Image 1 (cartoon, one colour):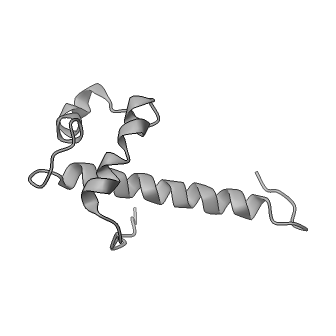
Image 2 (cartoon, one colour):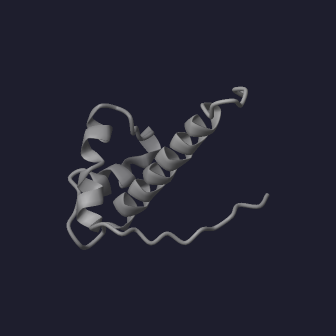
Length: 85
């Protein structure tokens, strides 16, 4: 199985990006399995500085999914092109 690795270079403050995930976690958009308690400890409350790599990676993944979903929905609504399922 080939999984492409892409370097990400966020252009916004890490702490701000991590803090922006709080509503998504609180409203259940982002959920963690029971066996992911280590990730939960790192995300809530979001640490400042030390041990903030896990929430940072989660935020980058969420950001990538949002971009993918947005691009896919735009591709489905291009005028003159049939919608694909």
